Amino acid sequence: MGVVLLVRHGQASFGADDYDVLSPTGWEQGRTLGRWLRERGVAPTGVVRGSMRRHRETLEALVEGAGWSEPAAHDEDGRWDEFDHLAVVGAYPDLPEGELDRPAFQRVFELATHRWSTGEHDGDYAETYTGFRGRTRAALGAVVEQAGSGRSVVVVTSGGVVAALGAALLLGDDVDPATYAATWQRLNTVCANTSVTRVVVGRGGPRLLTFNEHEHLAPDQLTYR
Image (cartoon, rainbow, N blue to C red; front, side):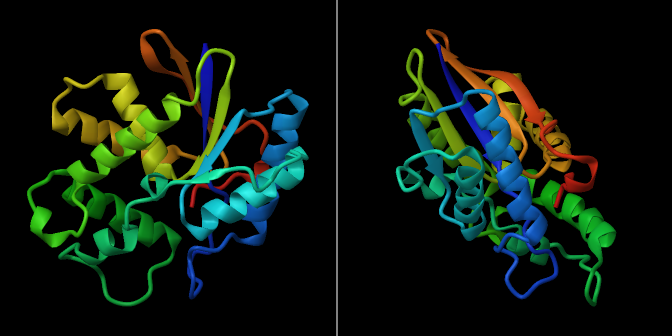
């Protein structure tokens, strides 16, 4: 049996000119996760990351903490990238004026992603929710092929992606779209930075083992955005 570890990136820089940069907390979260994995003897046979800067920097911090010998030995796959949350929020018709603080942004974010996930306004988005679901499943499928018996693959990605795959593995392929979208939203709101979600790979295909492990983080390191 193989295993895939889905790692959400460290805290990005909310409110900065470039969100796609780890904050100092994000860097330390990544190093802490690396040390935690090293203590548990995790030595992956494969490493994959999305193409976003926060994915790359999280992997750099993780490798530093873990002491893995070949930090450059990884694959980049844009299918692991987050959906364009700024575009999704920007398309929300009741967007408040002015700069939003974290709680206000979170409220708008949840309303905007719900609108996106219904599929009723697909013309407003460059990537539809259905398209997002499809590419994340394809990304997992490619990694599952690497996670054969006795192998482990670490993937550095984003919270929306982890939640999408968590919902898919929990509910199966035949669930109605509304139930899937509601489950995805609930999982997405609680996915912690540098959390680990474990997917086991056996003869029956991938199965969700754990979701959102974050016991490696001290209370003052725990963030969700």
